[in-house]
Length: 239
Image 1 (spheres, rainbow, N blue to C red):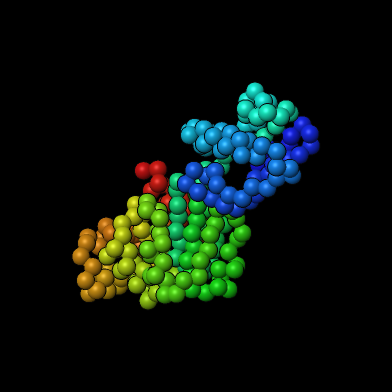
Image 2 (cartoon, one colour; image 1 turned 120 degrees about the horizontal axis):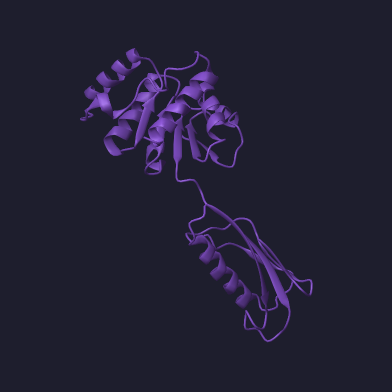
């Protein structure tokens, strides 16, 4: 956000900061004329915009410093506001392998927030850069379960069932999500359910998670598997 006064001074909202109302952060000024009153007016206007239901909004205002702001000095301040709201749909991917990478590339084009957890920094580095994609290196991976936002859709797709199993067990014992899926074959699903039962997970394991995941479409390539998984995620979201 940048403000320019009629006298050429400016007021700029620096990147960074944050807060529940989205109106906190670092402020810098070209001159210090009336910065408190102007800042208060800007925050009030920003909060009014945030209260509106529009997912994105751009607004420009021009305030007379005497009439609108209540200052003694004259002049005009012009300010631009732009509202960005994070998507309510969160997809969490455990694993950063070939299929997970391809899935992230499909999802970043959608209105969703993607979190990827892996214990291998080099694989995480290969993830596509995107403003709605966050990566975190966590070991062991099950320690990331408590970092999953409520209501997230979770896809477990690590190197194999030995690394999938602790994540799945932790989730089923401590959390609940609208979508929980594990990449793999029907045979792998059977092994996981037996091991979960032995681990003391007491729930309907046939309904507790999906395995295999993805709609029955496409060929057995990372890119087409990723598209089938993304399609299933959308289907589950909109059911």
